[in-house]
Amino acid sequence: MKFGAWTYQSSASMDMLEFARVAEQCGFDYVGQGEHSHRPITAAERHLRVPDELHPHATMFDQWVLLGAWAAVTTTVKLGAAITLIMERDPLWLAKAIATLDVLSGGRVSVGIGAGHIYEPYLKEMRNHGTAPSQRWALVRERTLAVREILANDEPAYHGTHVDFDPIWAFPKPIQKPRPPFWLGSSGYPREHTMLRPTAASEPDIEARSQRVWEATLGRLLEYCDGWMPPGGEPNLGAKIGELQQRAREAGKPRYEVSVFGAGAGGQALDAATVESFQAAGVDRIIFTPPAAPADVTIPRLQQVGELARRYA
Image (cartoon, rainbow, N blue to C red; front, side):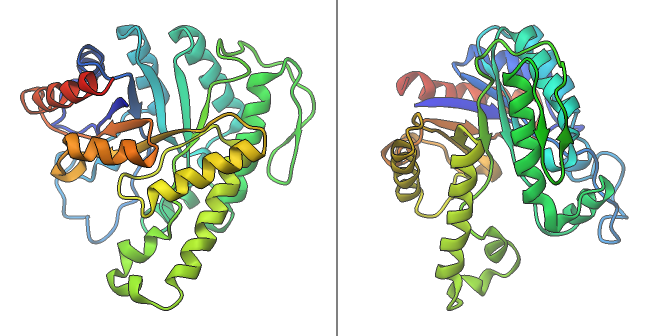
């Protein structure tokens, strides 16, 4: 079992360069950074004190700038976009950022992609970027395929509905060949049911809807991704991983790496029993998420989980 580390930035967070250095020293093989460019102001949050009381999505560092800084202060850990909101990003510039970071880090980049949350204020965030929420997955697909093409080929071209360009030169190319791995950061379950309507799990159509969502997730994984990053509480995780690996074999594709995201978030326990349950389900990496807190709180948590990392290496 491998272990990764991920945390938010806020006025209470430890220094983020030190976070990456300590995680590497503790035995983590991965440090990840999410992204939100901003948080639309809502009436419900208008009274909050700026910036100390804001939601962490309003105070996150730029993803690729921070990953580049981490490349300079670490030597072995993978540097993960976890996730990049690719439906809000220009694919040509994103490909340039990925390739540059892979070269500067000596080939340590992994690219997590996703389509964001499907409730407010995140729908407004998408619209602020010119992204229609109803088209987010179509944009994720085409932009991911286009970025993969740019990274892997000397004269890439892509012709789609949302992305269209004739052959181009775009260098540098990444060290990893044919390109860094792309992980889909997405649940295979209709999470909006549990987030927005807690009683919806008992609705008659939840099972059928869950199967449709999983089939869509599985199709995305098999078409344009190399790994899966589900949430730690993903229902029926072991069965889904088994089906994914079987479908990959049938398609002649390599085994998919699976990294569960958000373990330890909200003060949840991350102990040997939890590790072994993920291990039995076929998980390859646990991405530990301590709360945004000062160094004297966060470092002991990293050290504690680092002991697990060494035990299960």
